[in-house]
Image (tube, rainbow, N blue to C red; front, top):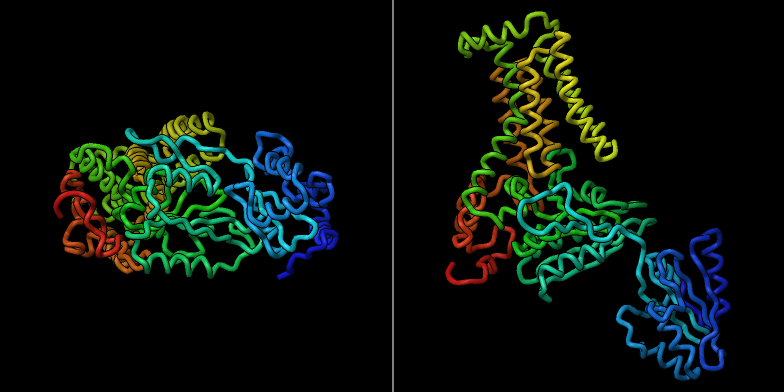
Length: 493
């Protein structure tokens, strides 16, 4: 570490050398004190720091106060933070000074002092608090995370006003120094979860971690699995719910999503407004979501298996209808389904990359036009259009986008198994899938919990799984919480 010198000329020489070619970083010499006898200079990123001399800015008020002091009083004020600013701190070496400056703060160097002073400012420009788009709900907050780790932490703190909510910040990336924050409830979190994610984050040696998605991939337990091992959310209320259940939340700069760990298949089928709505409708909708996931995974493969290798299990009238619909189609069923599935994938990708209104139009109108044109040209049969449309609807009904993407990939493996082995291939694929999910763990928690351990946590977790019991019966926290703190506040157990 390169310690700071009491000679301001030496500090300024080192700073100017390091900042050569960085035109967006300013070095501003200032003479402070009543008689302007104390030489100082500030370094800061131009767009991240407010106007230095404005009375309504923190740094402006700070510097204006120092201008009216005698030299001895000025040194004492800097030594003891006599101005009473909340976000200041002493920096004893050059690396710490540059890290503070690159985080969006101003750093003040003064002649005669062997430390620099970090002065908090408005930080980098950002989008501010946005409206949730990808996790829309009927009831509950409409707020979404922003791209600032500090703002995201504040949005969660707004919902959990308790000093038991702890926040540990750590920079990630040897060049990017992206700030990440671990949030957890001190009295609820299971310590091994916290230690596991801290160890994984400490083991990241990469030049840049620019988004939480990079962190997710670098710390996943099973890197080859298509299924998410973190729950991703853009909603502060969902993150707060997870924290109150004893889970850990990770937020990073530059990312409007938070990572929640551990995660299970059950949590990925839940939405944040499940807790706000009547238990009967929530239970009904969860059954719909599970059915939708099954359609998205199995429907194309089952159609190909039945029509190609097992037509005898269908009613005679349906077989005749399918035969009539397929007259003139030159491709086998598996190729029909594959062509139309890939066409819908192309439409989905095109819709995502186009501007909002245009993207929506491409997705809806493009699907209708391509489907109708393909049927008219005898490239596919009408039944295949229905099958692919139902598959797409099932895919869209899955609450977690990451889980939906995993199921989309597995769907193609199921399709080829069914095309070659028929119904046997379908059940073989299900067995492989269940074995993979049963072996998958997220920070030591079984991915299939509570289904794989029905009586775990005294059977409390099954009350909030496929069906959701009334809130008055949900008196225990999930298995994620520390064993001695699983009873929620309230009467009874």
